[in-house]
Amino acid sequence: MGSSTKVGINGNYDYSFKILLIGDSGVGKSSILLSFISNSLHDLSPTIGVDFKIKLLSVGGKRLKLTIWDTAGQERFGTVISSYYRGAHGIILVYDVTRRETFTNLSNTWAKEVELYSTNQECVKILVGNKVDKDKERAVTREEGIALAQEHESLFLECSAKTRENVQQCFKDLVLKILEVPSLLENGSTVVKRQTMKQKQVHHSSRGSGCCLN
Ligand SMILES: Nc1nc2c(ncn2[C@@H]2O[C@H](COP(=O)(O)OP(=O)(O)OP(=O)(O)O)[C@@H](O)[C@H]2O)c(=O)[nH]1
Ligand SMILES: [Mg+2]
View: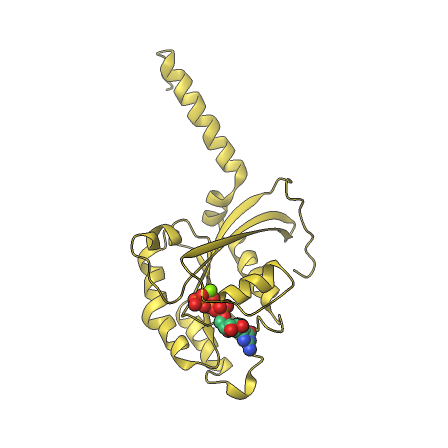
């Protein structure tokens, strides 16, 4: 990520964010994740079930831990679906710029699912048109992408997991926006979590002694 520096695996972080990748099968969700996490890209098989990867990085002067969830675009997974969405701070909605149906499905299927299951009201969304390296086969224009992003109050970017163009940028834009939303920072903050745990401990010990807090 451009100006960011890596944080040691055991280092502390200021915020922990849950990020989701969604979109039709074959649009390149796992490829985008792989391209972001490691510097390599090989041909991937369709994802089975749910997978996640962790990335530690610094953005905007904050040390962040991103847990990035990736799932199969094809098979829907019943009850697991709500836990996949629960507590997400950011959602990456991916389509393939060479397959128009993957774009229309974002409105028909994926955006509806986000509405239904996402628990953070102010969860940040980014619409990502992948495979821009296949420009000759393009079936969705950049303008159409921008218009749909506006409609869904999402950020927008076109990228290629193959050439890695804009892949880092996509995560960076998303995270910078999350950092601007106070309600998301509250439940992503490690400081708040520690304080909440302390309060619980106080509460427990006070109950034990029969005392009460006014
Ligand atoms: N040319 C090109 N091919 C890509 C790009 N990204 C992914 N692919 C290819 O598209 C195919 C599907 O990519 P995946 O990353 O498996 O797609 P997915 O969205 O994870 O699919 P599911 O796991 O089935 O939901 C693979 O053959 C990738 O190599 C890209 O930016 N450009
Ligand atoms: Mg996949």
